[in-house]
Structure formats: C-alpha cells, structure tokens
Length: 208
Image 1 (cartoon, helix red, strand yellow):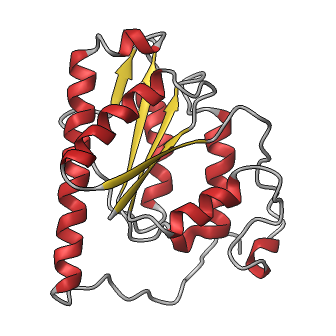
Image 2 (cartoon, rainbow, N blue to C red; image 1 turned 180 degrees about the vertical axis):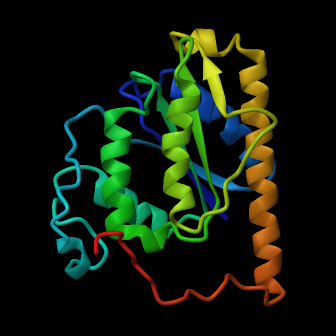
C-alpha cells in the first residue's frame, strides 16, 4: 500500500513539506509506503474545458507540466494527502490548477481511494482553503481522512511549524488514521468486500 503526499507549495522544503513529513513518519511506522511529490514552482496551466482528455487515455492534452505526471503516479497509489500553503484564504494557484486537470482528465485514478487535505498558514484562512481541497474528494467517491482537529499547521517558515506542537500532533493522527483506513480497505478487499458498483451518470441542469 502506498500514499502519495503532494506538496503544492512554492517552496520544496517549506511549511507544507514539514507537515507532510510528520504524516510520512506515521505512515512508515505503520508499514505504509509513501512518496512526497513536489509540484514545483514553474508555471502550470489551468483547465480550459476543451474536453480533449476524453480521447487522450485519461490524460490532459497539455503535457508540458506536472499534471499528467500526477495522474500517472495516482494510478499506482492507494491514498493521497494534498498539502498546500494558504494564499488569500485559498490553496495555492499551482495545486488548484493541477488538481482541476488531474481530476477532470484522470479522475479514475483517484476514485474510491482515501484522501486528506493539509493546509499551512501563518495565521488564518486555513479553514476556507481546507474546504476547497476537500471538494475534490467529495465529488470523486473518495473517503476523507480526518484527524483530531482540522488538518492544519501554523508558521511563517518550517522552523515555526516544528514549534506548533498541536499541529504536529494533528499530522501524526492523520497519518495513523490514513494507515488504519488503508488496512481496513485492504482487509475488506481480501474478504470480497468490494467498492460499490457505479450507476450510469445522471446530469441535470436547471435551464428549461
């Protein structure tokens, strides 16, 4: 079993990375493989709604950034943690742009796999940003992994996060809960308790 921890911050080893590392320690302690994947700080495209991914084997037609790399990594993973700093009470533009395309084009690689969102902020805006990232899970049949408090850490730099003892405990609890959920799902699978069968999609709008 493997969890992909996505660092959506502009700094490879900043506050978000520090939070993800605390989760990773618990995953490893519980025998769960993990990988921290940094989305980087180069330009990424937003989704333009062209729909061409439907004819592109579950990949975005734009192949000049990390979106398709994330889609391919997702296929090999059993759970996800998406981490981001808070920018104007929202997740980073990078992680939103990448997740919009990854979920739209390669959503099958995330479906029914547990997910968690983690936010780092100096002071506030974290709960609004937390809500944005959780929306990716709730539209994709993904169980959401919670902790003993909202999944956030505080600090202006990585050294500050290491002083946020409550935040670090929240991350450790999240790692334990993710490990527990993955083992439960694996146990169910081995006992023929499989994921639900999908119904044909019904789409309704309200324009008559």
